[in-house]
Structure formats: structure tokens, C-alpha cells
Amino acid sequence: MEITQLARVLACTLDPNLRVEAEKQLNEVYKTPRFVSQLLQVVMSGEVQQPIRQAGGIYLKNMITQCWRNRDATNSVDGEMPFVISDEDKSLIRNHIIEAIIHSPELI
Image (cartoon, rainbow, N blue to C red; front, side):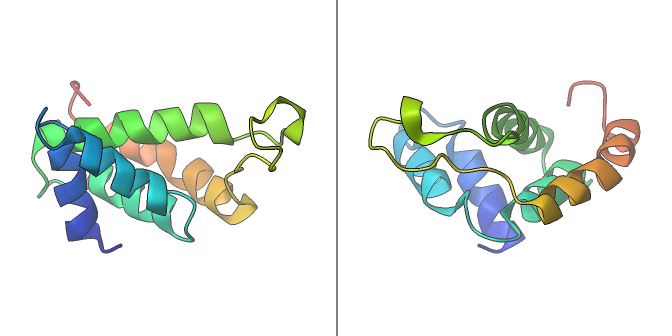
């Protein structure tokens, strides 16, 4: 998913009439390579509207909370291994999170 398309999907999460479909799209792509990188770019972009950046920041925070650590499949509903953010994406987050926080408006 391209960054502009990701920003549009995040914008749709803010509209009650479009939220369910937008969340479905995010759930289809959040496991793809470079998604975390693209999400971080949306959050850090000064060209993206603030509510969209906030939505991206919340989504990123939730991904980190839920998908950072390795977990086993015993608590999984379908027995599959839960998704874990790749080491490459973890490194990218570590390398850019401070910069993202410093350059973000207070509301983000």
C-alpha cells in the first residue's frame, strides 16, 4: 500500500460510515513488509492532516502493544502463530521514534 493510499484509509477510519471497511483494509495489510515504515511516514509527515496523523499514531501504538513480542499459539483462537513485528521494522521504529516524537505536534 502506498503512503497516500494508507493516509486515505486512515482518514476513512475517522468516518463512522466508512470505518468498518477501512479497518478491514488495515487488517489485510498490517502484516505486509514495510507497512510499519509507511505508517511511521504518515505519522511524521507535515503534509498529512493532523487527525489522520493521530489515527496513524494510535494504530502504530496499538501495533507495537499487540505485536512487538513473540508469543505462542496456545492463546490463539485458530491455533496460528500470532503476528509479530519483524526485527527490521522494530529496528526502524527504534531508530525513528524519538525523531517522530520531537517533530510531532503536541496532539499527536
